[in-house]
Length: 315
Image (cartoon, rainbow, N blue to C red):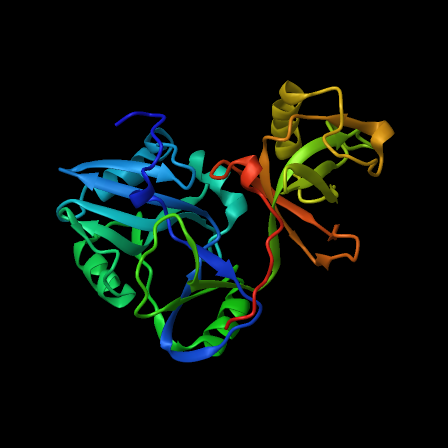
């Protein structure tokens, strides 16, 4: 398998729609929303390919997970989330970098089965696909089956809040798997607001902080970049150092924004290519993030695909 392979359409992950509130419905099932990143696993004659959401083959970074999935029975294409589990037993996006340094526990949470032994299962119901998935997964500390609960989403959401989870996933029990599409048959309901962002620049450090003061954030809007605020919290000394080293290689002379933004005189502009994730309190009337906190970089999404995520009421 090529190291720079891009997933064909049939292997691309199905995407969920953000909705505004939990609900109860006997025709739906509810799962944990994991705080990691999406990973497609292709198992063919005992060999495993691990793909990020944007189609990169990432076996080299997660060789232990690939080795564990060699135990899958037969050939399969599995959809799941790679997470790092903290001491509290909950997945935390910030810990994924630590997991690469063996400072946190990696876990591949498998939640769907697209193909099994050359049979296309995508038109089968979700519950049928999950039943087949559970039967082929190996017993391994690095692999988990994503259990679900039927019907009672509001109670499950309240439990997710108490456990400190990112949220819950709601999925129509009889839904097909639509590769590469965002669908209302899968909904994500978050316990706190999160947003993927693109780093457009950084400000000069102040007082005792080294490297930089804050990051300038952007999202794509049409064919242009839209300014959505600065983030200056959520950085450890190590993160400041590592991120600054990446940013100085991307410096450019001009702002990517069509209009002036805050602190331009103290800003070093960078090519808008690094994608990060932040949590925040709310959107302001001007379309900026209020009280954002930096969570980490994301390597599984292209900068030009990062747009403001909108909540959609369930129909």
